[in-house]
Length: 293
Image 1 (tube, rainbow, N blue to C red):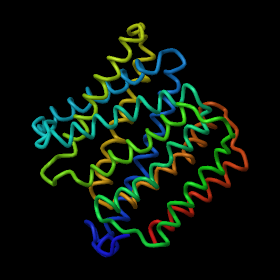
Image 2 (cartoon, rainbow, N blue to C red):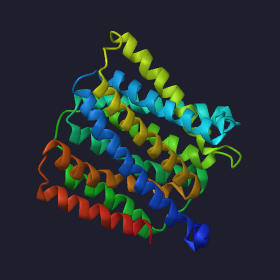
Image 3 (tube, rainbow, N blue to C red):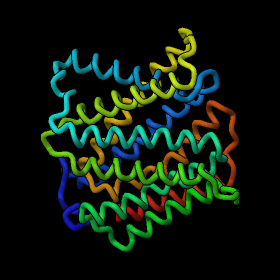
């Protein structure tokens, strides 16, 4: 971790990296809530349509919020180049990981996708001159090992699905590092609105190619509304976390999604919480402590 990151206080006297880590942890918890609702919708609709529905709901709520608060001008990026590049990267990330989910066991897809924190640490060092201590590097690697313990991936021949999952991790890592390059004059709302517009457009295009949109009932719209609410909240928290703290410090808190996935799975899908999952979760908690040391 860079020296100034450990001593520079944020508002209220809390070190900025600690505050950013807390926001990142909360963001990934909220995103896990979105995943639960997306999984419910995906039982009745194709994934591109689900992505379009949820993203459109998030975009509509953001527009309403901006209209009520009089911040509509903040939705337009002042630096559209970076905002559009980040949005495009996240759209590609979504398509890659959805393809990986369709051809790989979820455990293997998740394990490769969770290479992101390690890639963020490397990219932040190369592009942003962020430096992690040896203890923090150990935390990043230990976190990934915790994911491996929790997921227990099988051994299967490599195919395009593995390449897609690994590519998704790299693209997502690049999008997160770009947040640290966003100028202070760019609003969080602009970064999120640009992402939602691009993602909704791409999802609709893919859904149209795949046969169009299926009819949607009131119950499905309600689920999409709450999924969109969680998506919007998660992205706003994530943008703020990565703009506030070092990317290499915040990114490992993505591993915490394993913990939330277990809890939500038990609550909503009657999925058992097994011993290896608990062991992996404890290792992930340890990794978070090491990263912040």
